[in-house]
Length: 68
Image (cartoon, rainbow, N blue to C red):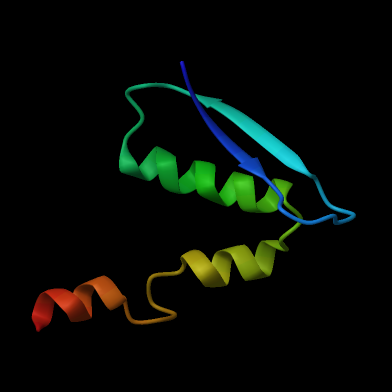
């Protein structure tokens, strides 16, 4: 079992530390879901999470770099 740990650097009313245990064979799609859950546990709203992870919302910098 692997772990992903987030420790907040400054004090907040939200969670200070979040630790998630994950399967070693997790694929990229499961990782995306895990990132959304981590964001929710840190206090981000559903709307801001969906906006940030929506591929249509903002052009990918990686795609632009690959084009150059």
